[in-house]
Amino acid sequence: MSEDQGAPTRHPIDWHNPAFYDRADLDTELRRVFDICHGCRRCFNLCDSFPRLFDLVDESESGEVESVASSAFKSVVDACTLCDMCFMTMCPYTPPHEWNLDFPHLMLRYRALEHREGKRPTSASPRLAETDRNGRAARYFAPLMNWVAKDDNRLTRPLLERFAGVHRKAHLPAFRGKTFVSRASAQAPAINREAPAFGRKVALYATCFVIYNEPRIGEAARAVLAKNGVESEVIYPRCCGMPQLESGDIERVAANARAVAAAFMPWLDKGYDVVALVPSCALMIKLEWPLIVTDDAAVQRLAAHSYDIAEYVYGIARKEGLADGLGPLEGGVTLHMACHARAQNIGRKAADMLNLVPGMALEVIERCSGHGGSIGVTKDFHETALKVGRPAARRALEKGNRYLASECPLAARHIVQGMRNLTAQAEGDGAAGLPAGGAAYHPIELFALAYGLLSAGTEKGAALS
Figure 1: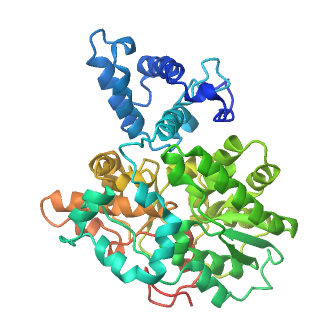
Figure 2 (figure 1 turned 180 degrees about the vertical axis):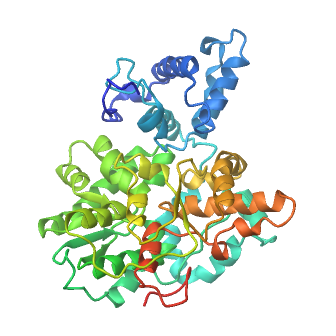
Figure 3 (figure 1 turned 120 degrees about the horizontal axis):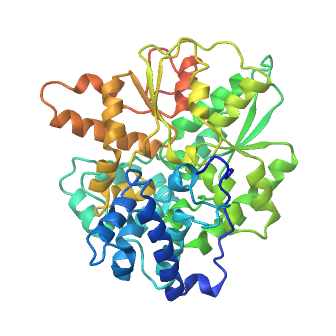
């Protein structure tokens, strides 16, 4: 992006327009954009979409986009994870530039056409995308589902690969029989009335991953907020629709946006702020929903009053000041900045928050983990995802810090898997570079640990005190 261009501007997604699904019109736009990308090549190392595109062009008869078959474009589209990094940080031709280039939303348009035609991206797993359905089933079958999904289960993982499209070596998160909503309703943390920020109120959009897979992230967030005088309520109407966005099902994303926004309106009316616990969901609320649902005042209002959890805690520190009690985290922290956090254009808030911890030794990695939502575990993309994430995994391994964290729990796990692979391939003992216990954290968990809100002497998997 040129220095005099200003911040990139996103246009509403014109998905109600019949021309949006016109294949000839789409092909013309693909060739226009791909020709610009071919001439620039600034994003060659950002993700696998661009190397695939450039190889297609370089190996074509003329060495130009014009001689690439339209059918070959699908491989470029399938490799896009909709991370938005090319649009937000790399591309010099985004609006308001006259060339009006929005690569991720063009990939979304291609997938929307595929969805309308009854197709799906090769890199998508429709069964994994049903997060609420899978999570609800896990309340009754969590032990069985987790046994089936175990990395070393040689009986079930080949079957899972064949029938669900999940790579047999991809690490899958465990399900919890007791969801975060049920845990939160059973016990609320005591509010510190002496904290400088006492009086604030937050409605936590708990997100499907925290609800069904990692309730500890939500519990840590509530504990940190309560320590700082903030009352919190846990709200979860349904998934934000990011898995459906990846598959081009824009209509379903719009339905989820309307339902979630409507559920949060009473809380906004009562003076609550809305805080999302996972950056992908915060990105959907803040940036994607308003471009998809342009005619719903509730969606627009929610977007204007929503925060990422690290952004919110750091905002407390800047405005009122934090409650006393933070202690050091010995051994250092390696923090991966998730793409969907960076795409929110709010700065490095997770790093800012962790740097508030006394004596913090923080190393920041701003490289893609390669996971890319659910596609990182699919049989067609997992090996590519590991390749894309290898630089981040290598750097984390070299740092050798005690703690590894990412705002995206899936990215964190993926980096650990990459670190283990690198360790296994290296000569000698490289295990010393792995984080303590081979675990990865959300930054808010580390902040809770620094506050002493985790049981003494415990780390990942421990209950909050």
